[in-house]
Amino acid sequence: MSENTQVTGRQIAAARALIGMAQADLAAAAKISVPTLRRMEASEGPAAGMVNNVEAVRRALEVAGIVFIPSGGGGAGVRLKMSEAGDD
Image (cartoon, rainbow, N blue to C red):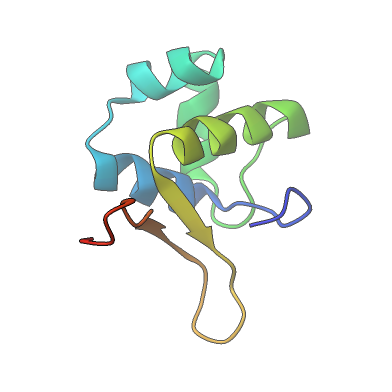
């Protein structure tokens, strides 16, 4: 997903749940506060917050193995990155 495509609050929450990461851990990885992350995840549409904070969360999730799927056609979503061996 390009940095110009907005990540939704639900994508962030789903991504975090998919990899089993606690809010506190993701907030620490993105160098933001837990209340800031909580507000992002509660957003109905694009994640609320400063652009740099939303991008920091997106990057932290991508490093953890998340791929963001744009909304074109079937709706926005997330999935795990395929492993190098291709067994995912």
